[in-house]
Image 1 (tube, helix red, strand yellow):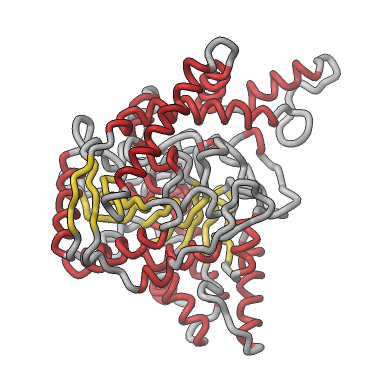
Image 2 (cartoon, rainbow, N blue to C red):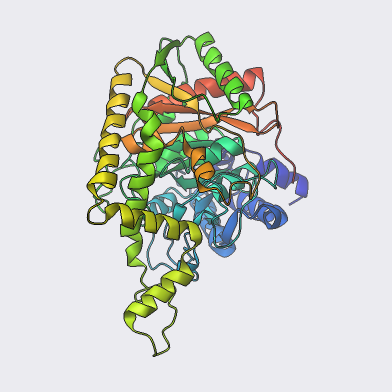
Length: 502
């Protein structure tokens, strides 16, 4: 296949790709080979992938082509390639969670998300880079080195799912999966000009997803268009009896909403706490233009005051580390993964200590220590208990807001992508990247980030965040599709029209 044909294939949307495979215009093998060639050509510079499963991907693609030749009906995403965040277990290929602690570990089973992708005949290209154990906002905390933002390889692609967002923005895959604990799907989407969705908590199974903070973690779809994200959302969502937090409820009609986007007659809330000091001028400018666009499309704009949102960052950085200190206790060097000091001269306790010292990176150690302190005797009520009370206040603020509005909009992140290394020695500055996204995780609502143009100061993507009530995920797609269509008509798609060249 010519290089020009490959370029045409990798620039198709997932929906277009699936349609061409179903009609026979393209084969799944052709599509997969085009993306594997793209990975080979550019990923040495981007470093989006930790593991590329070339043979496995081609085998999946051949199976799709065989189904079509037999006359079987293909699903909406059959044959479409996908980049999977390396936090989901995958039978027979490595799952490292971006950590030396699990380097070389080959899971004996698939996560539920992995199973559902395979059942939908999605072709899994490989596993993407991420902040170690999903702890970070820049993918600089990966034990295997940082990922570059395809818009500017000297800048971060967001985190913790920067590998997935970078794979999309560099046209190495049309679809990706991320996880969102405090914004790790939406913030990378924002800074790479892509679409990322955090579904309602419990809407996508966490079985086989390596845990960071169990009451906050949520897997979700990443794509370059709203419709593609909806198709992927529908493929991975739904009740799972293997996950005790899974919601036993029908998946909202997200694809239908994405195909029929409209904000006519909707009430859209703007929270005053989501702007002010620390927000880049170009981000606020693009957000204000987005609000004006929503009004032009027929929405009513409602000003909201949610005072507890100012406390969200503090509450999150007590709750999430507390849960991570409990979850990561399982990595003891005795059962699986890395084992250090097992030379016959050390006790089991010493082996565990040496393994954790070697296997965990600085950010993971920082959060484990913070969480263990917050849960310790004498401090539990003052720290963790108080943070949970704040979480309740945030949930109540959302409930009150959704009594008067259908959705809430905000900037996704206060700034565009910052240079790699700029905040590496300043954890507080790094944590502020999640200022707008964290409240949604604490409340369990659904939220989306989609592109809303480029910041005039630096020409880098800006994201618009849409927040919907729990189990009303279809509203994200209804509003997102309307905004996307209006933006494309007025300014063109910031990624598809002005894609960075690598």
